[in-house]
Amino acid sequence: MVDARPIGRACAAVDVWNHLMKALDLKTQLDALQAQLEQLQSALHELNSADARALRTGSEALHLLQLSSYFVWKIAEQRQVYAVEVESAKKILARYYEVFQFKVDPLTEID
Image (cartoon, rainbow, N blue to C red; front, top):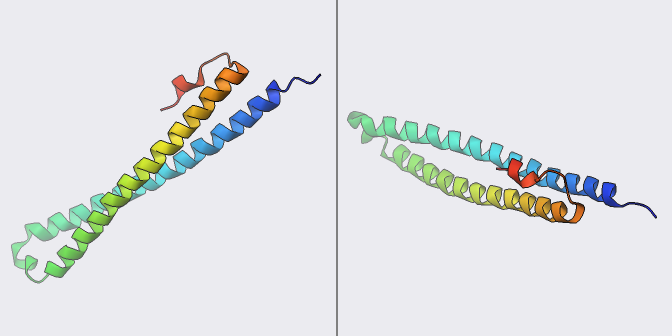
């Protein structure tokens, strides 16, 4: 009879790896969105601090406000998706931890 535990462990590792890589990709996207939002907020602050330019750049300020709102919404959405991926990876690890009785609890290493 063949011991299926090594195959199961390999499958678990691949499954967890895929979820963690997706979470890492989402985190990278989230960081990029955060950087763009900071640039937009900086530009908006610059427009607001120059009273003389404020009248002629009102439409530009409105556009920057709209972009800022979009990025805030997009960041919140990405954070939620990222949290779901990390939780999925944790659940898979917990399931395989029980089934294959890993020697070290892998959940202590993720966060």
